[in-house]
Length: 69
Image (cartoon, rainbow, N blue to C red; front, side):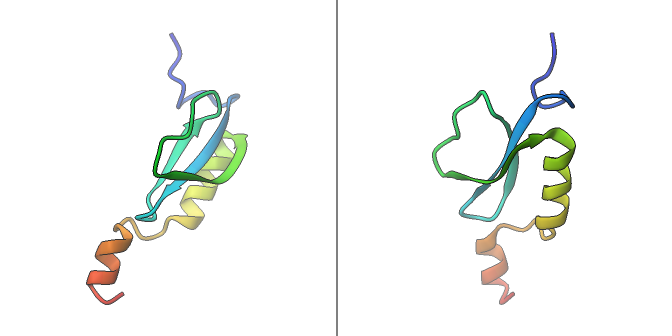
């Protein structure tokens, strides 16, 4: 049984929620409520590269704002 998040040949989406958190999501699954597509569909590594480049602060947006950042 293969794990859908570890298939290098599969296509994924990168999702972002209102807190700026990112998630890789398989294209065969519905996008959950509260999340939007930010990138894709692309292969796994391209999505990982996008996340690494674009999600540089792991803190939720609300925490960043509360800290004055």
